[in-house]
Length: 404
Length: 195
Image (cartoon, each protein chain N blue to C red):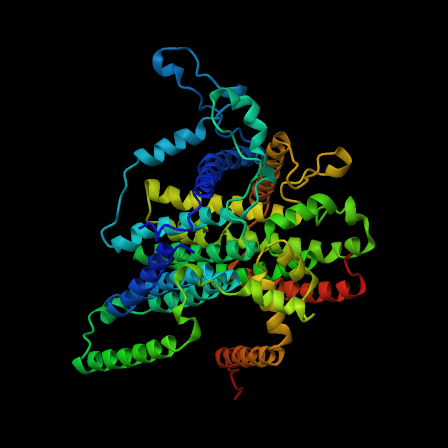
């Protein structure tokens, strides 16, 4: 046994587990819950309604006059009420379904969506030894001087890993449609998988110019580079002020647009939510699902959206870096970043993600849906070609305007 | 890599590989093959070939198998599931499989790497990169990564592919193009000839 367990680094394992629990259960899942709430409130604002604004701490149950609204914003406890409703609802399994795959499908949508987050650098690094003065009186040895990286797995294939795991999410949708043994879900799943496979191409191709500019596949290094030399879409400091970066800004912008459109299609969001378009297919591939199993599909979609936003932010908008950080003196320095700055970087990253999600919601409630043939045409005839031409354009521009 | 993980992923890969053959339901077979690919990808990654492992999942598990599954779902599953295989087919399959495994075992045992323990079986990419740097064929980014103690496996692979095997790459690209054009020609509807 000892030889089997050789090479395991215990402190590394503990740090990884803490990071996984923090990112998945303490950040992404609550964020999923609250982005559903944000979606409902934001859509209400767009449509001049009020939206869910009543759910608070239910004191009326105990005979008080009013419920307490947290922070004065109505409905902040709505996600908990929703969650409770999902758990308490009857979990109905139709008799005609293939039970094993019917149960497996929701898990297969949720798990890949959460797994993709491991390569996202959600902050710079945390020098925990800053805390040694505070906890010194406990008589413990204290933390070591080596700072902890704020990323679960610092892989050298960052974005590729995300795409690879995200492409496994198609299985959940395909199986849901097939196992339900019903026409509408099946049509929905066929549409969804065709759409996801088609747009995966543009998604993958759109980031090739970005990788060419960075010369790097490691998301952590990309963030560090953008922190020192200006974001890809906002090259206003460091080397970002050079001519070549501004010439390359054009293909980067094209890349960004293709990436965002493809990401909308990958996450099955409006204007590309053909997989579940209510007017044609009832509810698409999850028509036959109820209670928590339906909720897993729902949460999987939002988790994919959050992580997609995270990837877009990391690639194009500087990841955790604070805008104009060198001017503000808030830039990252390997090994010498104080703890408070590390925490500020984490906060910056999530603020950017929240802004991106609000953009997602704004698009959903302001654009009409495409027809399915239009969607396929857009994917194969415009997005794919645009991404391909963009790779060539970047390569040619990089010959004449080399970086560094 | 800890040997424990090697045995875990090897078992995963082989177990699901067995499921592909043994299961009656074609959908189960297809999904088992996908899982087997995932196990294989984990083995690649444990050999420090991160890029190949990721591409294994991205291409085979994420794209090819989804298309397989797609086609299988459009078929009548019940008919397939009730098919009985004949004795001759089973005997033949076992014979071919055992001949193949004996052959693989003989070839593998004669290789120079066969005496290596699982713990240090990772590919010698670090050394390969250092060799490239020494011979002056390397790129600046690779040298920088090696100096920082990181493994530039994707970059090394790209460099080898586009310099040493550039011709082969072009031929494969052409082959794929021919395949694509063929599909378009086959699936294009023929125009009605006006009478």
